[in-house]
Amino acid sequence: MKHLLTALTALALSSSLLAQDKVSAGSLDFTLPSAAWKSVPSASPMRAATLQITVEGVEKPLEAVFFYFGAGQGGDTNANVQRWLGQFESPPVSKTEELEAGGQKITLVTATGTFMDGPMMGAKTPKADYSLLGSIVPGPDAPIFIKLTGPKDAIAKITEDFKKLSLSPFAAK
Image 1 (cartoon, rainbow, N blue to C red):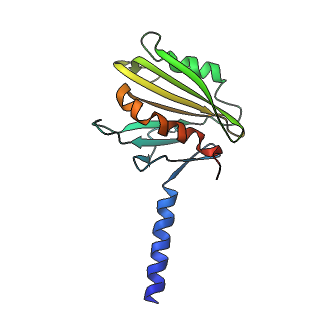
Image 2 (image 1 turned 30 degrees about the vertical axis):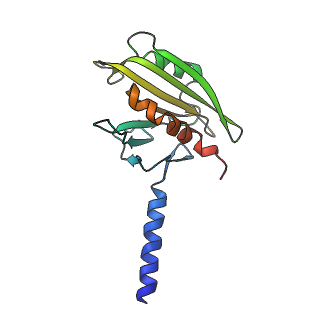
Image 3 (image 1 turned 180 degrees about the horizontal axis):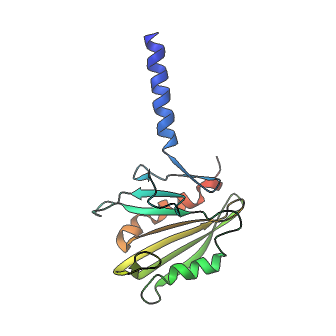
């Protein structure tokens, strides 16, 4: 009986650890790319999910925020890309690319410059040498938007992991 309880406890712990390797937004499950990426409670009802990412050499964890606005909501890809680029003090150095996984096209935006940090309708703080990574992931009824900002050197270290995260709902199982 003792061995059965030990086995059941181990199974329950491994199941809870596996559950922490994913986060859901819309109706898609995203696989966290490494142990440095942790799901945390979202600070706003506007957020579908929030991840904190520990990056070597960076004092505070970075945050990747997932937004899902509901069926038919959220706007088109170009409008969202332009909105993200408009969050910089002047036009940033940017690149927009399409990634593909499982027959789905994911739009990835990378931008670097002076990011104007702050609430949508409020005072902004300029953050020089910042980068934004954003992805627009097609969902069954509306896109899921993932946005991550931080010091450009820190963002450069986790860009490949961000791409993996963005592609993960459609990656071969």
